[in-house]
Length: 555
Image (cartoon, rainbow, N blue to C red):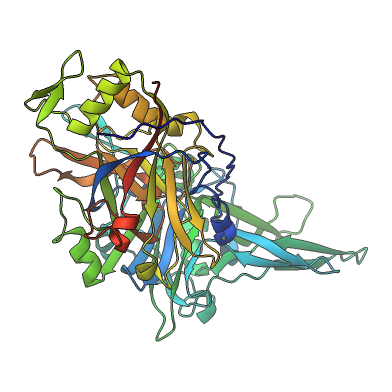
């Protein structure tokens, strides 16, 4: 049934590093992954069944980074990302001092950025990373006191279980926000907020020596917050309310960041590491020195960290509201073909969609006996896989390499920002594949390959170890694989779905989690699926998804 070919394994020389900063210039890393030289030998190619799967509300607490803003994607629709975080004092039971009066309150959260130029005076020009949509977009940003105490666990049936927060809980937190908007530093910090790429430069002059000191900070969100609120909430608080983290987080339940459109201005979205953020209260209080006059005041400050001092007892959550385009909705819901697979695979991060991958045509009408003779009757294993296992055992076939190449639908993705990486994992068991464990940074792949026009052409993923494990063990299950867009090659955990999703039209087959790396990424892509597309010359047939395997086949 298959052609005989010999293979000499080539050395993959692709080294890639994926940074949280998500630098958009990263696209070039991945060139050469597709079209490796296999010394002219032909591979064996097998069918793959791949279909779309909607991702319903999913756990979004304690992720890094988090999205904030509004992203209008011409292909997938509009996503609005809001955020809530607990806060904590950097030092509990602070000594505030008598007659304390606030001068100012600031919240500062650094952006992901990189320097593009430095002038002769040391001034740096920055470019912001992880900004999606119009670079000059504006937002109506409102920061409120949260009215919901976030917990890390709860008790049920005598067991302590982790408390999850999900992408669809924005309305719940919005309805419970407390009081008026806290950010009151002017329209550029609220009604016309924008992600400013300017370096923060502060110069101070020593009153005695007159020496000028220059302090430089990379671009950051800087918001001035309501002084009276923090005067009442912190400086005038009973000492017991500031005594410990658990008491404080019951008393001050956190901050809720809400975004809306800013008039008719285009909007955008940023990925941010809120855990690096801090709130600083600058105030004056009577000096404690007995040598000073009774009315003498000194400058003091209190700092608070976003999320809190303890990562184990504090929480954050990202809320993602989608208004999806009709074509996208239809592709991931009404028009899904789980039998033949879908012609196009729609992958989108956040509360978006993934592709379910089944290796081989699922036809199962025969098996092979101990001498390699076909035996009529199915055995729960695809016939293609049965034949490969027989050839490996009886004909001593050796697997040199196995790959899946996902080609991008360039026509649909025209003018749309592309994710730099996709990630393939064991969907059945929510685990990484063996190839990923062996070498996640290079040989496994998943990075985008770009053409001369700097647009993406494909993603290639090596599954050699997974394939070898599948064929050498006759009892190994041909598990379903999940394909998602990826934000980080090092994020390997899985987030729980709010409700289990049934797959394969089988009430006992479902999945209850999806890869966290996808929840963190707002982008999407459209790939050619494995469904046969008619004539051999059609684009669908030329680019459809197949499993490509290189063997050494002794005579």
